[in-house]
Image 1 (cartoon, rainbow, N blue to C red):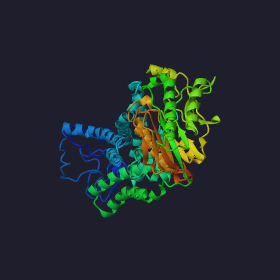
Image 2: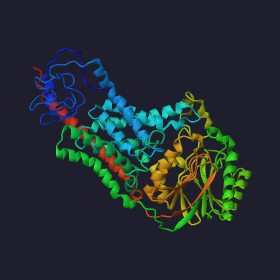
Image 3: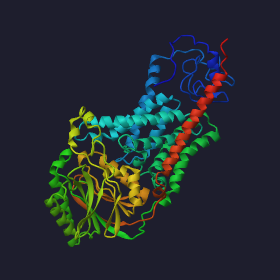
Length: 597
C-alpha cells in the first residue's frame, strides 16, 4: 500500500541524479506542489531523501523539494526501527477499515447519522497523498469495513457465500472511488473534487453490474440528519455530495489548521464544511407536509408470515389468509367505531403469492376481504403466465368491479428474483435453484386511482433507485406506496435500512409514503420524513392514518438526474485537470533532461 522508498538502516543516501533533481525542483517526482519552500503532502520521497522526510516535509527556501537542510535530525540518517516501519505500513489500512465500520455505524437502526462525515474525514486522512493504486487498495478496505456489516442480512437463509460475494464486489467499486479520490487529492480545493468523485462512485454502483445495487448510498443513512432537506433540492446525489464534502472538508480544515495556520487558508478549508451545512439549512423551506389536494385516510395491512426465511413461500396460502383475515378484522374495527374507515388499503408485496387469475380459491379469499372493507385494495401477487417470466404484480382490487388494474415491478432483483449466470453461480451455491423461474420486469410506472387519490406503486427493491421513484411521481402519484416483503431476511437490520430509504424518498418528492410489509416494520411516513405510525416485526397489524395529498413537484422531482450529471461533470473535470497537470509535468521533465552525447 505504501509508496515510500525504504532503505536499509545506516546506508548512505545516494546522490540524486540530474533528472531526479529536475523533477523534484518542478514538484513532479511525487506530484508535490511547493510553496515558500514547504513541500505539500506527497506519495513518496525523491531519491536522495533520508528516511522519514517524504510527505509533508518542511524544507528551507531554495532547497531541493523534500530534501532536508543540513544539520536537521532527518539529515543525520537516523534509522527507522522495524516497529516504526510496521506501524507505518499497517496504520492506513487499519484506519481505512475502521473508517468503513464507522460509516456503517451511522446507518439505521442507529440514529447516529452525524458519524458519516467523521468516517469520511478518516478515509480522507488515509487517502491524502497516496498514489492511485494505494487509493484503490485503501478504498477497497474501507468498502469491506463498511459493507460487510451493512449487508450481512443477505446471508439470511442462504449462508455466507452470497453475502461475501456481494460485499466484495461492491467494495471493489468503492476501491475505484478511492482511486479517484487519491488522483484528485492534490488539486486545489480537493474536497470539492473528491466529493464529486464519491457521487460518481455511487452512480456507478447504482447502474452496474446487473443493473446496479444502490444500497448503502450515503444519502440513505441521513433520514434523521441535518442534511436531509437537500434531498428535496437535488435528490440523493446532492444529499450524498453534501455529506461527503463535509467529511472531506473537515479533514482538510484540520490538516490546514495544523500545518498552515494562516487565516485565509484555514477559512477556505472551513468553508467546505460550512457550505453544505448552510445549504441544508437554506433548503428547509422545501420540506413541507401541508395538504395541497386535501387528505385521505389510508390503511396499511401487515398480515405476518408463518415463519421467516425462504421457506415462507411454502406457506403461500397461509400468508394470503393472514392478510385477508387482518383486513376483515379491520372492517370489524371500523364497524365498531374503533378506527376510522379508510379510503383505500394497501397490502404488501407477495401478500398473495398464489395467482388469483388462475386460482379461483385465491380469487375468492381476496374478493371477500375487499368486499368486507368496502374500499379499493392494492394486492401484492405473483402472476404465473403460461409462458415467459413470472410477474411481481400489484393488483388494484375494487369491492364492486374486482381486479381493475395492475402494475408489474420494473426493477427486478438480480440473484433474488432473477438469476444471472445460473450455471456459474451453481458452482458456489446450490441455493441458485431456489429461483426456478425468473421474474420479468414491467415497463411502465403504476399509479392506481384509489377512491380519487393517485397512489403510486414502488415495489420494495425499487425504492433504492432514483428513477423508479421519480417516474412514479411524475406519472401523477399524490401518495407513494412501497409494498415490501422482508420475511426472507428475518429480524435483520434490512427492514430498518429500507425504511430509512422510504423516509428519504418522502422528503425528496414531498409525498406521504405508505410501507406495507409482510412481516418487517410497516409504517406511515409523512412528506417531511417523519414516521407517524409503525408496526413491530413479525406481528399481524393494521395501520390507519389520515395523510396529506400533494401534487406539487420539488426541485429534485423536476430536475431528475440533472444534479447527478452536474456532479459527474465536476468529477470528470477533476480527472481532466489531473491529466493535464501530468502531461505538463512530463513535458517539463523531458525538456529539462540533457540529451545524450
